[in-house]
Length: 260
Image 1 (cartoon, one colour):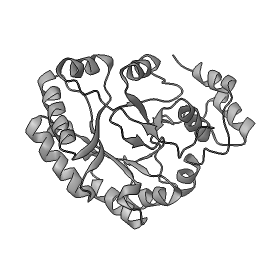
Image 2 (cartoon, rainbow, N blue to C red):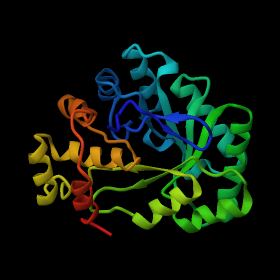
Image 3 (cartoon, rainbow, N blue to C red):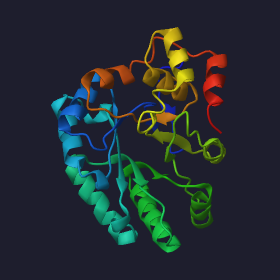
Image 4 (cartoon, rainbow, N blue to C red):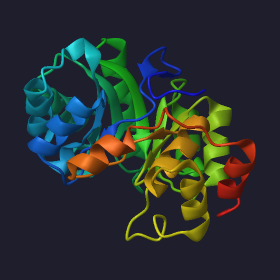
């Protein structure tokens, strides 16, 4: 049975937990609660404005640096070669770490040179061992093609919006073909349609679990990294409690059929 404690191997050689805690719009207390609940990966960004709180919360929970996987992202205003190096140093200091496990370009930009120069700076950080892995967020196939034309370093991760009603199957397949791990942000959807879906409710009832647990288990079995977020202690704990059941191939197929 696929487990939440079995890491996913990145093309950089690093091991990434298959489920992490998304830190967008959550504070120090929720992040510390997630750490106590068993999360060992934390996903933040310069744009979130809470990198310092993430570092503090990991300390609040008493976790050793070696036991956590920290992701942050460079924002569009800081992109470019020099800007990226400066932004990374700021992020690292705010997080209170010597190095970041995964550093991402937060969004692609219409200026190709800005993107490629940012990637060149990230390669420099990777070469120096200041980051363990580098990747991208919200990149389409054409954006990945741009990097491939200018660099031999393949992104370790492409973090995209993905849930059962927005499965991005073509892009996920393209990521996989390139050796890129897909990470799903907003894996439970926004606004509630996913959690209210009758098909997902039916699968959840069959296992005696929540719809959120079904969705996250579905992604776990498909080797898609997830970063759910919540400010509610009960839901924080529930979202990582996925090892007590397994979806059958038929159930996975039912969920796969919900979107193209």
